[in-house]
Length: 406
Image (cartoon, rainbow, N blue to C red; front, side, top):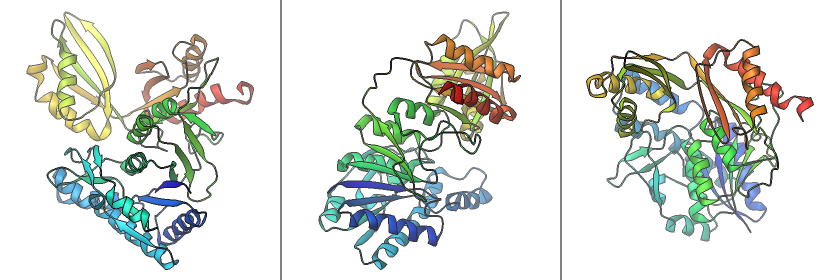
């Protein structure tokens, strides 16, 4: 008998019909002799509906109260699934994250799980009940309701799998695994049977939406067996592996793209002052991540810097920097939201000159100008004008995954 933590996303529970289908999947697993803990997202579109109501009241709603509002979506889906499973003659119980002791930091909208108590879940498992948990949320140590950010249900599932020492964490979604790129952009994308945790971590951080970044980080930290598969047509999906592969050559695992980028330019910084360090410190205080940093110009003792942030942090970053221009000793701040990031991910890409040459040559041949560049041992990323995103993805996919390169 194995223990599985099964996570189902918003599209998987987007209607009563879909909830009935998920109930069948969960029951089938138990009928095979396994124990199951289920983690659910809100029904598809529900979180957006709640946010829209909040922003109609206040363009920048109070972050604590927004978390209280958003967590109601998952409460609906877990209760409905429990009803559907009980109707099938199986024992099930819906539980809020607080009821199973999911404790988080107090960064509303971006909380991180710090501790999960296991006593209640172990009790439910001992009584052969299917525990259905609200994903995406928890409580801080002052009792405030918190959310983990978009995609946080994946993280809830992985963290639960870790503390329960589950045999596998299964992420059921609307795609049947991890692909070489987004199939909605490139119809020739290929499903991967397996991918290393390092490669999956890079893809998730660079825009691949099949898994939430923090969930991959947690899976790697605790070595949780993690599988991505479809709730619509479940099969073996894609397995995230942790054993170091003996790859004797460089390879590309996938092409990732993200529209969720804004380029920030800080102009006229004093060359003798650590402007960039102060910018990073100011953003770090607000839990805002900076990416793709570059010095763009140097003139008359002044330096211009450019970097990217996620679009949901854009306005806050502008506000922070403009109110601290004197402190960071800069002249002005500009932003450009009409950009996108496109990346190639794979083992040894940085040290493989042929691969990097192919990457940039392919973009150049299509007339795609790169605005910023960043790289690591496992990825190369470029910032381009947003209108070129799909062309860049298809071009790079054809370069590295054409029939002749297989």
